[in-house]
Image (cartoon, rainbow, N blue to C red; front, side, top):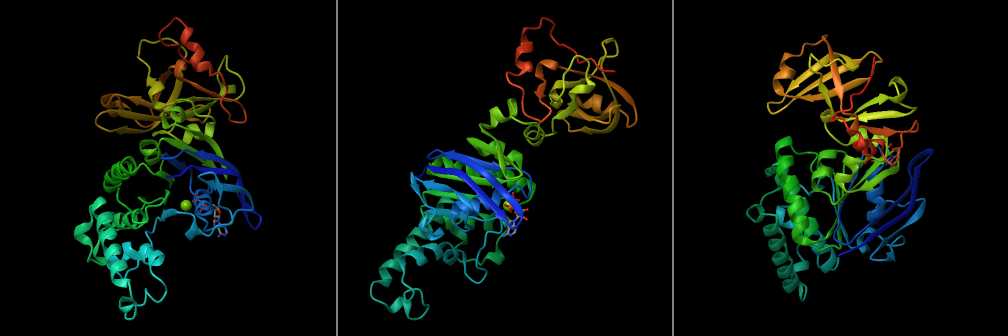
Length: 376
Ligand code: ADP
Ligand code: MG
């Protein structure tokens, strides 16, 4: 069990600044995701946490103790990589046993022919085999122990990598995109398995992903990273409901939030207005308010809902969530009128930061059920 404190961590590779001042306090037993686009510095931060990479400045503490001088092996953390890093010539049992053999056997004891003959090695090898079986059972791969990685599916390999981390009983698990090699359907079930494993173990998990859905569905908190900075660190609910920055708003949520230049909206100020698809709909024919006029570029009928994508005269794109039949009826190139529920609007200043307190929240005092967005 472990608390992890990351304070002022900075890292550059040559002239390229990859991390510029990262601070995160992770609670004992928390599941926290580092999420952000590819190249934003997630893996670098995780590798610094693990001790596989050094930082230029700042400090990492685990359970209140600085670990900056400690080697990776002495940090009591287990890392699961995207590639799984399994040894192809070893069977599953031997792969899972690697960290235990490293820790419990001497260099001599690990030798294939001499090792087993050394005094005491029989007992140690038996406890290693027992621990491997327990970990394999926990991850439900105990029937695969004698297979080689080449004889396993992607999902099974991912479980072997998890079991190899689990067997060490680490204070915390660090996972770097562990599901990104799985197909979409398997990813959904693997997500549930990792979340269940976290609940069962109660250990601290730091989970790196570029997939916002993974982060949203598994985590106690998510830290949204862009260009080497944490823009927001909060519960999935809070990040979705009140994104701290326009970039966070666009990254979290599918389909992404429509962002309209505030200057192009009557009565609006400088900065940006953000509307999620559920806040935009195709206007009823009878409506005579000034509405958003947009040319349809793309429709999606997902069965339970429809999505209509359109481009405004200003060139900005919007997405409306509709019923499936409305999406089917829309035609590419057709000019449609959309209405927006401004009570659900998010407002950002010209630098992209959320304007707080949110005008959207204050607007709930307005009498009419839907305050339409006026737009020419
Ligand atoms: P992410 O995991 O978010 O995709 P990374 O942490 O892997 O991002 O990389 C962040 C940036 O740092 C990228 O631009 C990458 O090219 C660069 N980078 C990572 N590792 C090295 C390295 N060892 N040497 C030089 N540049 C690196
Ligand atoms: Mg990465």
